[in-house]
Image (tube, rainbow, N blue to C red):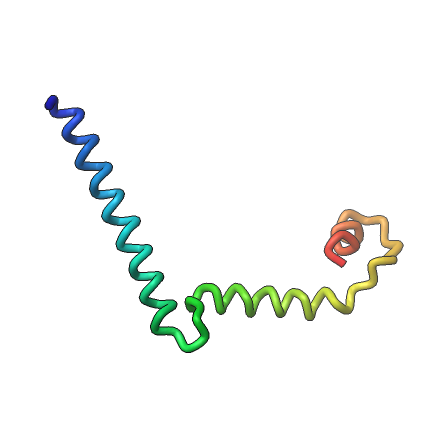
Length: 76
């Protein structure tokens, strides 16, 4: 086997080990969690909930013609 192929194979093996380790770590974190989700997922859920609460008060019939007004209308 030539050196370039050996280096490519070693790189692929290390990448596989890295991805497998991350999957196992995430699985273990979910298993140990009382809510059945990772801390990152809990944070994302919290952010989405906050955005939903904030946008609930926006008026979708806003007549503001500025760029920002149009963007807020799209969000609403």
